[in-house]
Length: 66
Image (cartoon, rainbow, N blue to C red; front, side, top):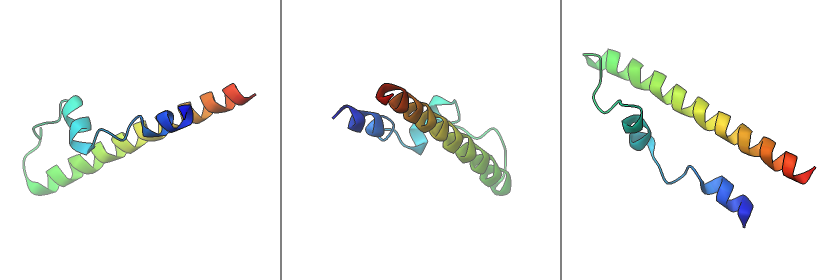
């Protein structure tokens, strides 16, 4: 079961919780097109941090096996 804990570590927090933690509760831009572009970039950043976390966990798991 320890591997399952690694997989589920980030699933309890959603997109809104991530943005709130980053201080993005209010949009720093005005207008729908700018807001959409801003959230697109914030989503890309969120996905990249998730990818980095998954790579770290996979690297640690490979190191534990070897």
